[in-house]
Image (cartoon, rainbow, N blue to C red; front, side, top):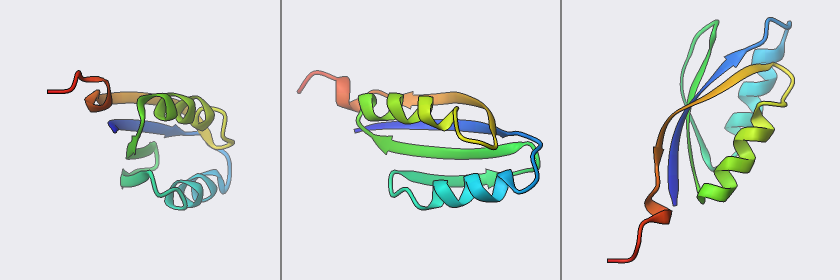
Length: 81
């Protein structure tokens, strides 16, 4: 399982923030953090491959201008102890 902290920056489109926030809240892998008029902080928990795919998709959502990963825990890629 990978844990990734992300900041998504909003586009300036009317209603875009509401739609993106609703989509994020409907995904069990996502925990939404603080939100401002500029963007939202979130945490994603999934396999590294799944997170990578999800981040690319998030960047294409209407209402999302920029996606910036700020933390990545590579737990699922560490060798077994």
